[in-house]
Amino acid sequence: MPLKTPQSSTSGSPEQGDVSVVLVGKPGVGKSALLNAVRGMMEGDVGAAPVGAPAKSGCPVMYPDLTHPNLLIWELEMESEGQAERWLGEADVFVVVTDGKFDEAHARLAGEVRAAGKKVYFARTKADLEVHTLKRLMRESYKRSEVLEALRGVCAESLGAPSLGEPFVFLVSAFEPYALDCPQLRETLLKDVQVYERVLKPARLGFELITEKEIAEIQEAYELGGLSEVVTRIQCSLETIWNAQLDIAVTGESGAGKSTFVNALRGLNDEDEGAAETGVTETTARPTPYAYPSYPNVILWDLPGIGTPNFQADRYLEAVEFSRYDFFIILGSERFRENHIHLAQAIVGAGKRFYFVRTKVDNDLDSIVRRKNPPTEEEVLEEIRSDCREKLAKAGLADAKVFLLSSFEINKLDFHAFEDTLEQELPSHKRHAFLLSLPNVSSAIIEKKRQLLHQEVWKVALISCLVAAVPLPGLAFTCDVSILLRKLSTYRQDFGLDAASLTRLAERSGKPLEVLRAEVRSTLGRTINKDVVVGLLGKATGTGLMVAEFLLHRIPLYGSLAAGSLSFHSTYSMLSHCLEELASDSQRVLLKAFDSEV
Image (cartoon, rainbow, N blue to C red; front, side):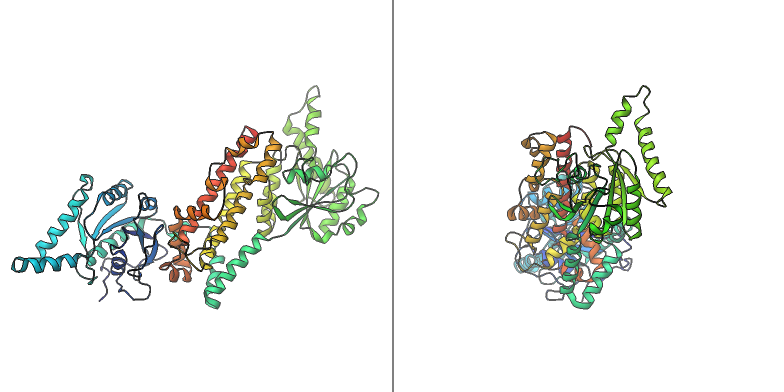
């Protein structure tokens, strides 16, 4: 008969905190049989851990409890030094398992668990085999209670660590999972669950990266077409984001500095290869596309200057194929002119957005300094803003956004307000493309990129596990490394750590390339290939268990896969850790490039 939940125990729910119990021991000691027994299951039951299966090394495998959803039991191999210790930060309770005497490695692990403020218990499996042997040998002198107590004492003594005191050792049967101390072990764990789940943050409430809409879409896909439909749905979602096309029109009067502005937004100098042609006269005769380096889907269109002989304002929008663009950036230097008003009115009338950018502001500031009693810089900037807003308001465009920028110091003045505004007003998939395409000219942009990319990590991790066919050699889980390799490569580009990006930054900052490369300290920042990714997966830890717990409660398919070879939590943790390291690398490179915080 299955093990009973104590009367004082209440069934867990997503409203309460999840409690992770890790059964850790060396291969072949009977962890899987113990895990099934603690969950009240027999070998062969649906959802039971496979007994006698090849060792799953490298990461824990989760098995949710059937009657108490907030009790999550993880099986973890203890093959090499430091392997189990990597999960100390995530698990709440450890059960150290052996089928003989405990040794120094067990004692060291138990000590580290205690030092981390976590609970640790000890289980001796296959105890019935030794009990039966002793019964046969001792005959009439055999007394079961005394034999069991002596066996516990031998096991406890073998730990040989005074700091552990005299721990109670649970004796577990190999063939009768509900005999000996297994029921007592389960009751002890459930009592811990009752305590922990009241104080631990609920997974549903503590994890905000997966929206309710996304959860509902995955649930719907699973109900409609099972696992294959989920894969298709998530893949489509990611492809929509990754392949979003963004076309930005940059226009204004001739001489306003459109081409230089286009280059600055793309992180290029006017002399760099692929830069827009600049000059003192109008150099743009027709709409010319300039893709962002590494982001061919995001294009800045350098449009001919309005008011030139070839393009008058009344025919301008039709000539430049107005419908192609997502929004317009109207540039003006020195004065706000009538042509700007006509163009802005035409854009709004056609249902598009525009943003007015006053360029060459650095020239205005330099000229003001030469006055006898010059106003402050902020007073000059506010005067320019007020003049632009006043003229736009008189033309019925009071809601227009005005930004003051310098193409030679693009990250100064109103650039962050400009970037924030576009981020808020663009559709979500276009916003993603715009933000990632921005050059890493400030710490704020790097941090926004990290946050944005982290929002999709769970999808990449889940899809890489779901589409996989065979486990990787040396790893205990199924995972499509090609997906991860491709995504991690784009992370390096997103943070400007690929060779081409670092070379451009070296030229722009005047710093030797090797000096900037020396600031890249992460393994992934220096090199990337399949072996590197596999190695990172093998070392993964972090917040993966918490996210796995969240998915277990909210997405039905995850519960059916959690007890198998799927290791979403390790993949998620690896991707999250790589993002953190690459963002840190990018911050250090930026600081070194300009010798100051930006």
